[in-house]
Image 1: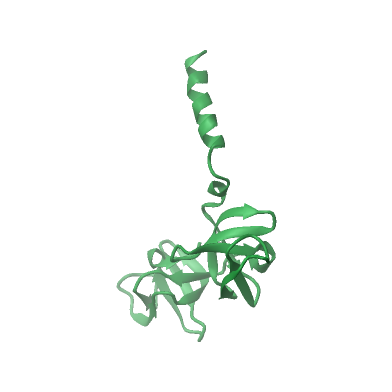
Image 2: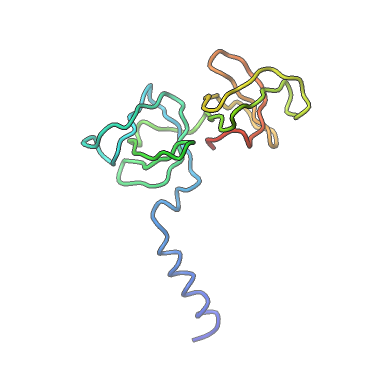
Length: 150
């Protein structure tokens, strides 16, 4: 067996051994329906753990048929039906506090303040900054590292 073959075979075996969810590790979806139930398992017979509102971002970590296994920004997991999700358009504030800035710069004037768990609509990205809009219409720039959701 050549050196190349001895090197490639273990890599192929390792790749095949990855869990099915590994391919979804960086995929995010958002709740597209007015409300979506997060369930304990992939199917309507499983208990509803909680309900999520439109726009809430989720990270896909697995799939079973038409059901997506997802994780929220706090690390809680559950299952949602794929038809209730779509392209992510919102992010969650993961820092305790995040400043909204008038411009995409750390020294720009303050436009407001966000708290951990606030959900904001993503409007634009510029480098390490994201222009967001709150439910009340207020807009401002936030450092990407303070947000979660894709």
